[in-house]
Length: 77
Image (tube, rainbow, N blue to C red):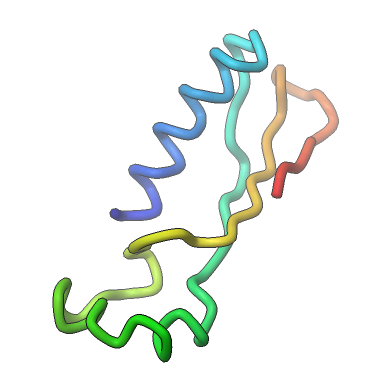
């Protein structure tokens, strides 16, 4: 799944779960660990060539967001 799609859906979910309708995702970072590629070598075969923005499976992620415009950024890992 593309990172921008994940960020959009995550923003919608955080707005609802944190009851913050003006919440905005500022940054989303993460990458599949190299050990995943060694443990699951079929991933590139199944999905073909992927870019770092294509996230497949479980990806450890950090999201930075602000609950309201101008609020101090918060972070979830």
